[in-house]
Amino acid sequence: MNKKDLQSIFNHQPKHIDAVFVYQNGIPVAYMFAPYIPDNPETFFNYNSKIEKIYEYLKNISTDKLYHYGVSVNNKDIYLFVYKVDDDTYIFVFSDSQDIELGEIVYRQIIKPIKDYLSRS
Image: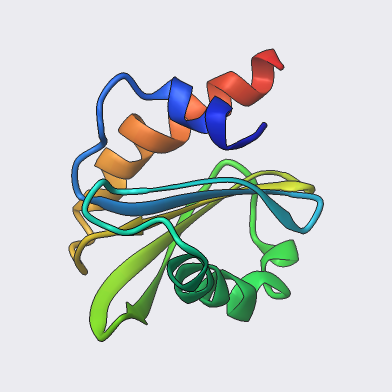
């Protein structure tokens, strides 16, 4: 999977989402930001550094289960949702707020389509 593949999965911009990252074998292979967030190296670092802080702890989480962590990006408190597809693949979704109710939306609109795409490739 790459950035172009990730963007092709969605025919519209998912709501309540600031960023999505897909990691395979310990590295980010695809990512995308909401249209109102600039796609530049500084922004990438700001979001990716939050993933790097927790990545080493993720090997012990269950597959097919959605987890969430409170993080602060650019002085904004949001949730980082984490989904382990398999031992080598993780999906990270940054919400636009700290609303736990977004978990269902994140799974249905973001994670499931990515998971389905990965299972076909």
